[in-house]
Amino acid sequence: MALAQQVWERSRDYVVLAVLLIIGITIFVSKNGPALRAARAAALAVTAPVEGVFERGAQFRRSLAENERLRMETAELSAEVARLREASAENAQFRALLQFEDSTDVSRVVGRVVAKDITEQTNLMTIDVGERDSVEAGMPVINERGIVGRVVLTSPNYSVVMPHQNTQFRVPASIEALEREGVVRWDGASFDQLTMEYVVKTEPVESGMLVVTSPFSGVFPAGVPIGRVDTAYAAAGRNDYIIHLEPAAPISEVGYVYVLRVRPDPEQAILEARTRDSLRIERKQDRLEALLEQIAADDE
Image (tube, rainbow, N blue to C red):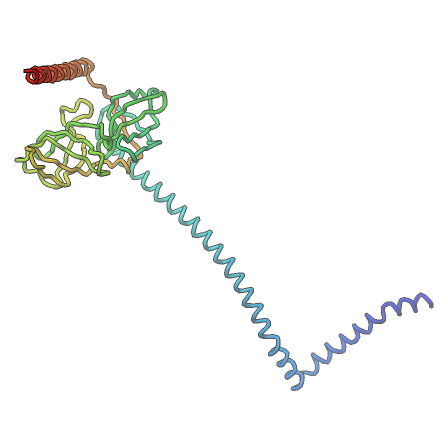
């Protein structure tokens, strides 16, 4: 009996609360009168603004999270689009290279440009083929669009290429439509623009004419595109044109190349080198003789 009394004393408050809740819920459900509806409406009128504030806060947080998710998705899609564009450009270049390969029987090896310095006057490129691929210094480098440069240094797995966008580069050239010879170089000033000289100014040079490698190049096979005529003018005091060309293969766009495994005739190269050395010696002797004559005239 004492135990029951102790249990009752401990739990009576909870029992009373439960009974009152049941009575309240019963009245609330069964007695939906006008007074109760009015009380409910008044309660909703008081709590609705507060609920609206919390709801707007929740919506704002959801909007921030949604915006962050959309920004991340946009960044991922932009990166994917960039990758697809790069892949598409590489595929187009590969297709062009394959078409070019079918059009020539010269021994060659495909190389990928792995480093490119196009910020100086002595620009250079590095490709991922070298001595193990039978690449040697002096070999011409082209792509499916035209000349790129020539190999100047090799290692077992890499080669350094002097591109046409280098002030030390020279190549004998011919205006295809006129069959007139000249020399193409880069003046170091205008990027992606070459200069052709030694074409007499009486020739009818026009914009758009194709300039190709000359049969007398000694490095490049004849007929490889170099560029197209952009402008031509005769500078004061000169009898030849200064012709500006748009390169057929702009260095800024070169990604894959062919190294043509052709070697100049060593006998011809030695003879030409000796001739150039002999001419240099003769010019030095002429200058020395002129200087001695000048000194003698001053003494008199």
